[in-house]
Length: 192
Image 1: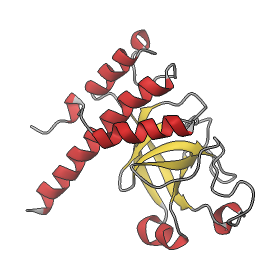
Image 2: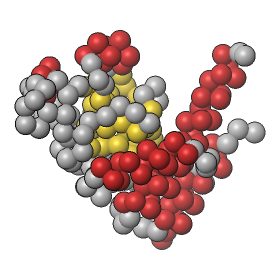
Image 3: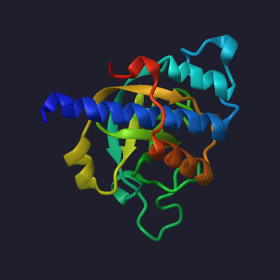
Image 4: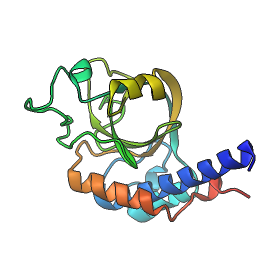
């Protein structure tokens, strides 16, 4: 298999997952503010938001992305201390199909689902002193993973769904199930 076809398959899978996540978040977190590029006349309904995703109208934002851990090097907390591994929203940090990330809630409200190239799907669950403006912090299990797998990058993220300012463990689990199902691809992003 050529590198180009392998990348094409990865992108295709990522887009299927993004679309499924957008549908799930519409169902789980409604009503929420639509992405900035969604038409005002269709804001707020799951059907219209699915249509926006179907048409490929996701907002893209350029951000500086860094990595963080639950440990003392990032949070000042150690295992066993109160609040260790718990985000601002109250959910536990995680790296998985949908990972927890930190962002400025004035830019990306809690519960906002992003697709981050090279990282995957991230839902805004946390904030940080240094995370202001167009900066995001991506969760990793260990400091060595932060440095080896990410470091500091400028990336263009896709805002799949704007959050409502709240996120629960149940909503996060539902997002993970929807993204794992990957049953839907936006028309504008389908391969020909």
